[in-house]
Image (tube, rainbow, N blue to C red; front, side):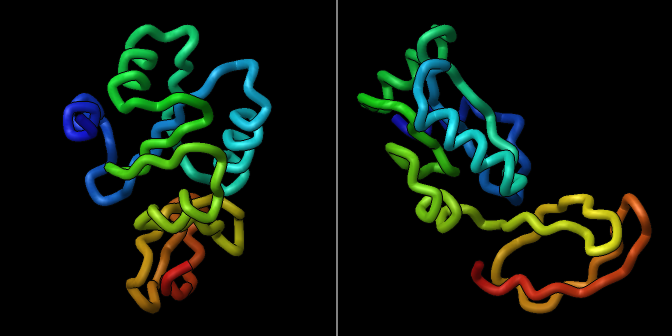
Length: 130
């Protein structure tokens, strides 16, 4: 079931976990969840189950009963649970200290040497489990 949904998500970045958010426009928790994801710098695909028939079909196939719900990689998170969402991701987002451009970095890779593509600033960061 989840595999068939994942097969339909072909545009994901190969090495980074994709986030699909099942929402509605009237849900307060959905708005909070989307704001959290944006503030943290996580990219996600929003699918409104009230206005998008394909999203509604996926929602029903996954046997979900409430929003917000998230497909993080191949794991489901029902309800707005920021800690669980972040724990399922294989990356974290961090800004360049010079220009504040945000980049995704893999978790648990130790010390990373980074050159910012926007400003060419070079810096190091530690990508232990965050």
